Length: 247
Image (cartoon, rainbow, N blue to C red):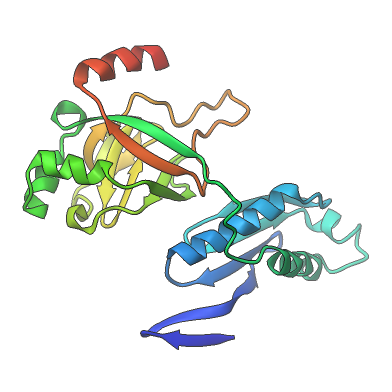
């Protein structure tokens, strides 16, 4: 069921469709907003408590939630249609995980960032694009409590919603071949943190000494979808000290 609001199509109920032969996608909307994020997180909280043989994992994103399953186990060894069975589970989840869910208290993670200089080589470009000083850009970047909309692109890489539109800046026309882990970037109206060394085209405004991805730990990613993030500015000396501690 669909209706139109302000030219944007939104669904009163998520659309459900298959992803290959071992996944289904629940699409809550075509545009990201707080309500969509809360509905997805409510479903994630429900899935955390659910014990279903054959349900392997779920992946929240900006406007979708994807469920992956083992077709043989989900079919109860060939007796059922696994897609139909998985869809029934998803519909039961939607009925149980009604929104809003105010009882879900998000985890707030503070991330120290040394802005500008060698650690944030694009801060000047972002400031010029916004018509602001570098100090004003840093202030605006540190003010919000961002929401981790999704984790992806690279292991542990958080896409953070809530960037002040004044400092939204297009990606670089020529991506870097290597961006150091911990680099804090802006791309359009998103901000995020590179969790591992990787190529990338985001505008780099600073770097954090915190490790966002530790593959040897039971929970290797520091952040997960639904967490909140606050950036805290630190000096270059503090960065060096904390970087040694994290290494």
